[in-house]
Length: 479
Image (cartoon, rainbow, N blue to C red; front, side):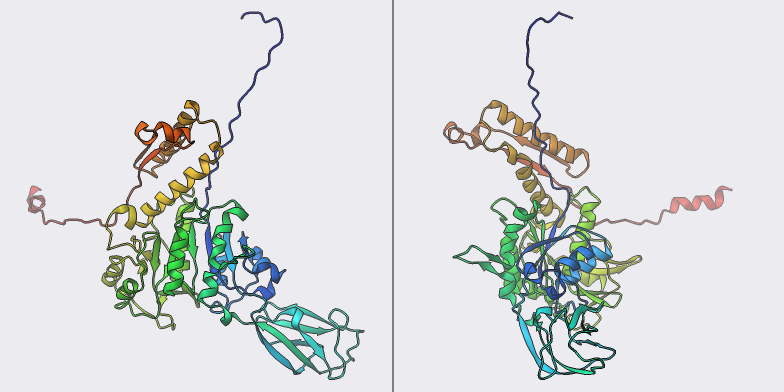
């Protein structure tokens, strides 16, 4: 080794690690019993990430009244039944959406009274005896029991006389019926820029650094206007990302009529998975969109967050199918296939229980190409586009020289080759072509690449031909 004499400095280049999202993040938009939350006013029209059921309860409250509080259905299924997380939520029910119960005499037993109504706002409660209005904390306390009912307890030593058996109690309670389709859709205030409802899709990445992959609104997405806005929002989130809407078709429609309903109401996007009808599990009723979304999250999780697996023929948390009014419905296998052939995902009972059934996006049968009509193929294209943005964002504003051009192409090809090696793509490549990059364009700082990928389709149809082979009869005389 040559001897060194002098001073030297060596710089080691440490490239930033590429950003990659490895989880599927559904965003649910709906209503929650925020009176039970730790901070009700902070739970309105905000992007809230929950990692567990306890986390959800602290931030948004929880109620078994899923018709009134639609987000609780998703929380129960994802965070409790399937132990999935994180899940993103937007509650649009405001603390000002209330109805007033005038003060009236109620009975106190052993110094306590439970208000037999959900949604009661603590701050609105008044306790009096006709002449005196008593003080919270000093004369009485308020706590919610396990059923979400507010319990008033008389404080010993306070101003309320010992042995009091009746007091005047008034309060305000949440009014979930105040939330309409327009509230779910929301908007952006032109003066303040404050977003509400679905417009908060734009804030998910800004608040959490996660791209929302699936947009869901059980209880509302069967409204054609809501469904259309959901699809519109999936096309360009933050002007960068693409998502997938999981929508319910009207579960009050009979299964022989729902195909026509789907077409008439415009549930026909390639960025949309249509689900139908509803399902029961352990006495509860779920929207099919929630069940299919949970299945998507589960299958993606089994594949390192890559949406290569169809939700079809995968288990759903169900023990029966029902219409909107709770009437049980048995959809024959051939009729389930009719739904599938019209871009509708349903459920079927198989030997191990209920499975999701259907591979087609809403664009089928108007379109027939795999890229727009097979759910996992469509989701793979969105996934690849989103990941390319995340992975190469750090190279924006670097000097546009040969080193950068080659670095982007090489990095993208290495990543895509990894997807091919893992079986998530049949093949893929990234190319930089001179024809796509004229000198005036490069001089203005724009560089263009072509990305070619082929996600695998699913084995939708497997057929066996069974023959009677007379040659085996020879075995009878071979002995």
